[in-house]
Every structure is written in C-alpha cells, then in structure tokens.
Amino acid sequence: MGLLSKRMLKYLLSDSKAGYSQKAQSTYNWRLVKYAQEGLKDLKLLAEKLPEKQQAEIFNEKCLLPFVEAVLTFEGEREIENGEIEKRKERLLSLLYGLLMTVGSLENAEVLAPEINQILKLGAYEVLPEINCLKAILLKGFFQKAK
Image (cartoon, rainbow, N blue to C red; front, side):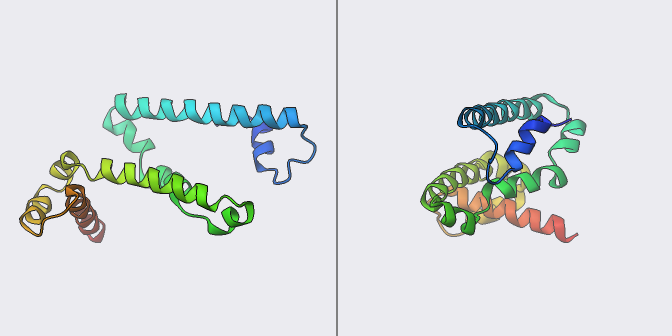
C-alpha cells in the first residue's frame, strides 16, 4: 500500500503522457501535488508524535536517505533538456540553505556533538555560527560512522 494508486503511478511513470487528455493530465498533476503535500504533513506529525522506537523504523538511512537524495541532488541533464536548470538551482539553494540552518542550529549541535562544538567555538570567528555547528555535527557523524 503506497501513497499513489496504480493508475496514478502508471501516469507518473509515463514519460510521454500519451493517451492522457489535457484534462486527465491536469487532474493527475493536481492530485500528485496535493497527495504529496498531505503525505509530508502526515510524516511531520509522525516525526513529532511517535516514540523513538517507531521513528527509528521510518526515519533512518535506509528509508529516508534515498528520498532526501532524490529531492536534493542536482540532476543536470534532465533540467537542461527541459530548460528548468535555473528554476531548480534556485529552489535547491533555497531549500538547502533552510535545511542547513535547521541542522546547524546551536540546539542541535549542543545535543548531538557538544564536545566538538565547544572546541570549535574556541576557534576562529564564523560569520554564521551555524557553520561551526554544522562542522561539529559532521565531525561527530564521521567519527560515529568510522567506528
């Protein structure tokens, strides 16, 4: 059971959309956006309300990382072919900035990598303090993966 019906999935995977009237395409496109928006709201609620044990089954590298990579990776060829390169670059930069500022918050660094964050605070001044916080979280994650 997934978010998309078999018919919606078939439409989405059809590159040419041949056989679909303009009205059908418009309806499918509207539904895809609305269903995805509602699904993201539901996922946010799960992230806020589920206990850690259940969150770990959903929000982990295996489940979440492929999604994040698909959303945030720049796919140059497709965008160039469709003339969408500038729009995608603008959207990705805005989204990545917001995500990095969220991830690099002082609160996250203090909880996830307090020792490293304290050391980095002693170093050179950063225009954006979030940069040191991001460094601390990245280093802590690197050391955790290296174990």
